[in-house]
Image (tube, rainbow, N blue to C red; front, side, top):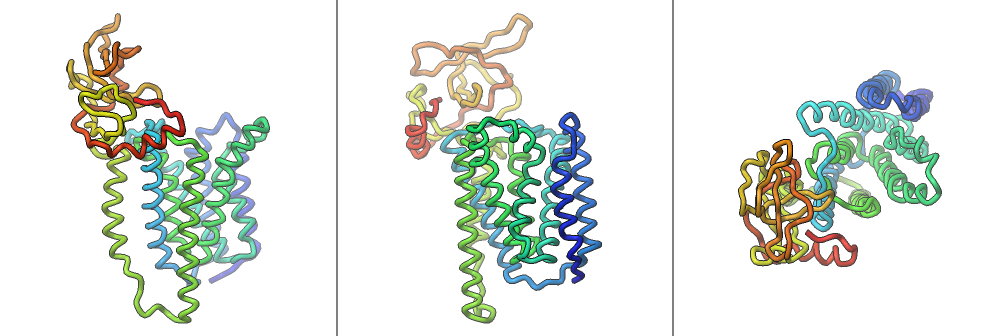
Length: 379
């Protein structure tokens, strides 16, 4: 492999520079056009001046499997957090055009960033590990650093704890594993990490500090797995006679992936934990309700039980009346069967998520234990 010690710092400086050089009024063009093209040029620069990566990596194949395992655990953490705290609609544009635009603007950069990271670490090794971790952290922060500079001290501390330090931990881990396992494993993990807020129709309604704790936990688990694997290999001083059996992970991962997709609302039916007794005659506090998603509010009739969103809160109540606004728009009057009065505001068709189908008793109690300590508003 051709190693160019001058090219490596030039590439790192370029990555740092592209984060800050776009004016605030041009952010749309920056994210959708300028930044992806700059990353393409940086990747080409790596290929030309650093050369083909012919290094023998210590845990390349196993780290790819570890990354897949880490992705599944991360999705499980996110789903569990959403199950405990509730889900919000993703504000990103999830139309076909929006998905393609956001994938080009963000996922392409995620892929190219990992390619550049692997090239840099293969050429420079551990000599610039700390430096690279900080620079790649800034590349994740995009243009937000300008706003951070003007934050009051209390918000600056919050940003450091919930955004900067988690990203720094993530990038320390990724530059370390880029040295040990190469590109493939990091590509899987980093791409999925970037894809969730872009492609998932629902996002967990969790405090950022909780998201940070979940990320720290996941990185620590993966770190222990990698360290243990390296220790076993060095102790044996040769390839393991019996390679690890990953078949159980494949089966478990497939089941877990289906459950996670179900929880994120990808399928037709959505699970919702019940946090009050407003519908006690049908389902009670602690149950999990299965809701069928609908796209046409004309499917809703008086007497149906619907899930709708009121701000960030999910409400599951019965439709007691259908009325119309002054301009002819349909709206729904809802009420909990166990409540003395109808809900305060009519429900617009755009607020409706779906229709109640059935419930599973007691399965939602873990969520209730969490909400007791966090004062989360009930359904």
